Length: 162
Image (cartoon, rainbow, N blue to C red):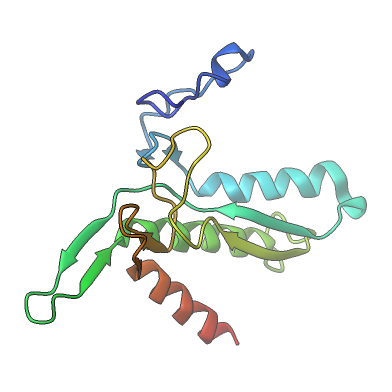
């Protein structure tokens, strides 16, 4: 299980640890949120592997944050506000696109995709059901699913790109 600072007991025996980065905001898991380092990582991939680097897919771009479930007084319909998740995703996508754009420091990287982790709130291996990463809120008692504001935001971003 994870400790309150987001570090699992499995990590405690390894020769490294999650460091303190007080200059950055924290996720719900307690991890630092530093999207500019995604551009740094892509740049280092380009520098290290050059032309032998295969196409790159970022496969778990997401963030654990508490959800704000609000019931509409008139309709009784739940709305899930997660503007911090939208900010997180927008910043990470922008940093990746800026780094890999023509003239960017990682322009040699063939970035083919950025996959959001995860569509649904789910069981997280180190923290059970206590962390919510999904674009769709899951009520774990009833299994009702409610798309969050980030779901609608991502849909608009994808529609604009097509």
